[in-house]
Image (cartoon, rainbow, N blue to C red; front, side, top):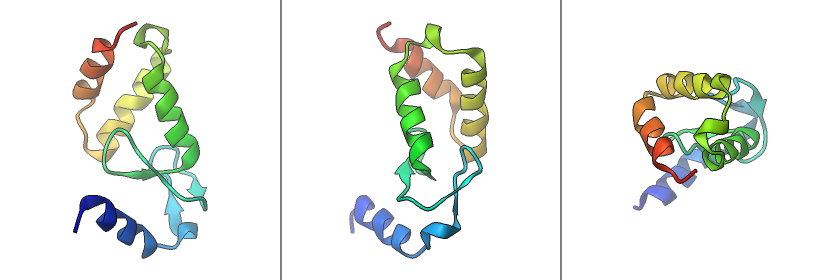
Length: 92
């Protein structure tokens, strides 16, 4: 069974009302987004936010955003330094 099918089946077994976004800690009922930071479901608003953070040049991001990224990476057990190096390597 492929990874996508496994993830979709796992999502079907958890009622949407019981979901809490690990990024913003709010409950959500819409279909989840897959975080770009790790194999974690997040709310749609945080999914869009991650996209905009990835799109914005690193020198234009406020320090509070970079701190939030570090905290979230730690929360989900991913390496913040890997993301930061990737982000710094993007064309400005």
